[in-house]
Length: 304
Figure (cartoon, rainbow, N blue to C red):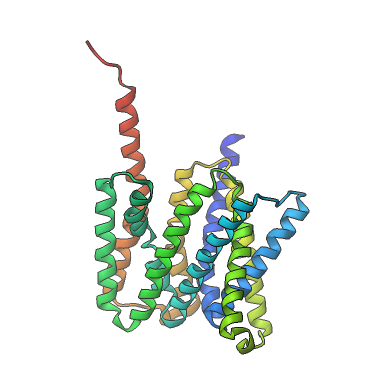
């Protein structure tokens, strides 16, 4: 019975990762600007999560201190999505997704500083491989410099809110964190639009864009998040991390299927992408083996 449950959850997990990969496709299909797009996305995601809480009769009450932290982190999440979709708008889905994979590099750089621990050799090697991959993409796809920069900035902001969330999740439920971060993102983007006069410049959303936004906000954001959290109860964190690293691969394949020649890049781009994705994918595998070896060493009995 248990293997069947795990296999079902693995299938759900991979479907969820594919759904995340569709996010980039929708970002390209939706015709409105990145800031307006994210404003609608977080509004729909927050509303659908609230419906989920009401339907499951779960309380969303939190302390004032946690509320402030969630809302502030939500601003970082909103900024991340704006940068990601802007990267798609000025380049291609493939460029944005591959650059977003650099989050592993930035996490390896900043997590030891924040947690005040030593940087491992494996993280240094992974970082160097990712840097070489990024350099190749810059070299062979120079026409997409803005898209590459926005994609890397999106990866940097993703690194920071992931590190923050790794602390927040120890004291609060992931679904509650997600809900208030969506609310926070909506608040900060609304404040920016209000100050900058962006609301006055907002154009009416077409029926086609609205349908894509509903899909993005519900299925690809709140729905995928709830599904991912539910399978984590039965699947190890390692398997979840490994499957999540497939998102750029699924996304690039889907982008080529949807947009064809518009997503075809130079050979140099694919070599750089392969280096980045290979480093990102192998990172948790090598790390798990190193941790196992350390655990075995500590468990070995001492001989006189």
